[in-house]
Image 1 (cartoon, helix red, strand yellow):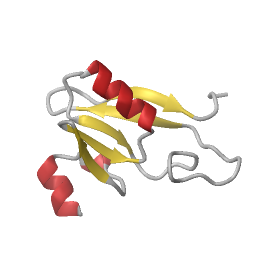
Image 2 (spheres, one colour; image 1 turned 135 degrees about the horizontal axis):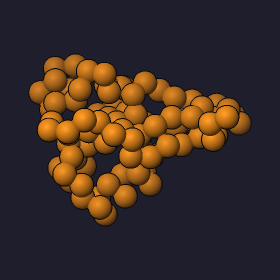
Image 3 (cartoon, rainbow, N blue to C red; image 1 turned 135 degrees about the vertical axis):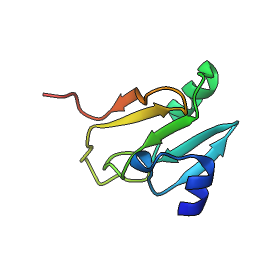
Image 4 (cartoon, rainbow, N blue to C red; image 1 turned 90 degrees about the vertical axis):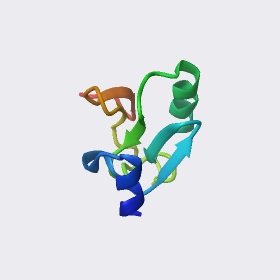
Length: 92
């Protein structure tokens, strides 16, 4: 999988366990469907979305009532990565 991620341009610091192409955008990791729908509706100039690692409570990583706070990151080749969405409990 790593050669594919490299060829597609997934930044190493945003890499996770799953990689997909959706309507020209890269989706890396456990990105919620609602964020993918928003990405496709807004069509920002970006390479894609990523959820680094495997945060508990993200889609496919459910563990009962436990939900960790995590960020969905918007990334591109020509701009710094930015937070696209935040999920999980509010920060203290």
